[in-house]
Length: 115
Image (cartoon, rainbow, N blue to C red; front, side, top):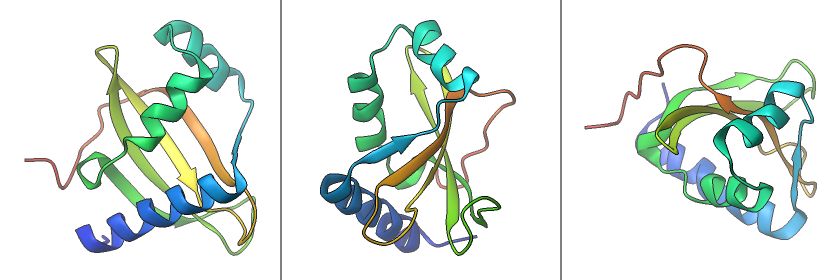
């Protein structure tokens, strides 16, 4: 499991790269449906991602089976009183970061660094 410092370093890199190159959201049906169910806009989804903290960490990093050489990290966040599962990756250097999952959690999320 990564340390709090390593998680913060990832979140800082994610934010920097997102600001520089944008973000690519996977247009999976459950990700799109989540915005409707949560009654939030794409802009509000971005605010949730911008607000991720070390305490929201769930699991990772894990090798990305789709984009070789990259890793994804898993987080959870309360949005409109619902727990949302978030899976993000830095993607490739100099390219947009990726959000693979953003939907209501299918099982309880355990946060190793939440007090």
